Length: 541
Image 1 (tube, helix red, strand yellow):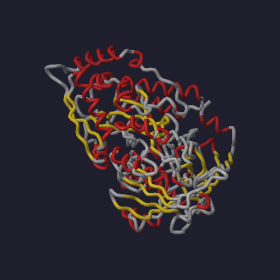
Image 2 (cartoon, rainbow, N blue to C red):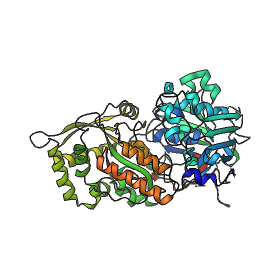
Image 3 (spheres, rainbow, N blue to C red):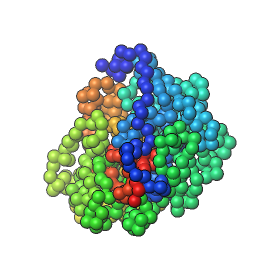
Image 4 (cartoon, rainbow, N blue to C red):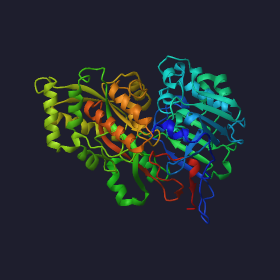
């Protein structure tokens, strides 16, 4: 049965909102008189514009400042956001959302359906140069989105229309079962149409930015702090507890850890736990270390436009030669697991994939790697040399050193390490100005397509320019297949194609890892690692 047939059984489907929103404070809990929190953020965000965000430091701010049609709860389950209800017709292709009556911007003006229409069409407009311009068409399957991203149609053709101030109609080119999950993504957040039109790119300046989320921007001192305070115009403000949140852009986990131990930080950045101090942390404050599996993969991106990485044998050799067991047990040692595929096995709708490399022993993998590299023309008399780019952070440097050492010892490969600050590193990858680069991908929503789409032809995050029509078609078929077992099998097939072509070197599946003071409560175990400040509260201490 196709997805269209599955939806066609119901002419109209009306869905009412769930009730879980904001902080859920247990009865009898004694709250601290001062509800303020300081959080680590890993790096200075490159932007506060939802259309231009692409990293975790930016997403952390977006979660507090803005709210899309849909949101997620502390456990990562999809819940209504700015939309109070929606209706589905035309076999799952036509969605009509009704915004909450009391949804407003932080300046008190009403949040309108026109703001969403404007934001989404601005997202796909080539003039915006969004790294996520592909998302509406490729992930959400909004009508004409793919063609617009390819420059074949104008942004005005996107299948989204404000029917009135509170009603947004969205037409899909194909019905997909995970459509609602995609609507919580930062790229599909609304932006204030009037403000953006008035100030252009300066609309995110501290004195101009307005937001529709639980918080509004109060202060921004670049490379020092970003302070958000409660937005009294947020529709669910009455249930928000934290009055002020300060985000600190501390790049080095060891420096953040020192601030945390000194009592200057209540919650570390996710992933900011210093691996060099993990033994000390486990010995001294074990209850404050929070670890759980994450929907994300740490990998090295290979630029297929740069020789010899257009040769699959070279790429495959690099992927085979690394010892992932040593990396997750001796280098990181904070809950990560070995990755031979790209999609984490905990992803909803993903069945375990066993690649040929997984069935080999480590010596067998290394022997095959040497053979493939020799066939490609490299060996002791002609060693492979390339620059390896990573963004400035202690853990990334340590991992890059481990990777380069393994490649040198096993294959005679010489990787020259180069580091760049976060924003520069993002720009380099976006421009394709790299040969091999450290990369990480955390799922945009909990479904395998959010991972596999990255390597489809023309995807905005496919910086290495990998392209395989068979892979593209397999992923496309999977997304449009209603039968869960058949869809899972197609996703497995797609992973096997990636394993053979090796457009990247997967290293490990991420774990969520944070340090959290005992008095901070309300966070859950969201597999994407999201923590919205509106869910938190501070106990008396």
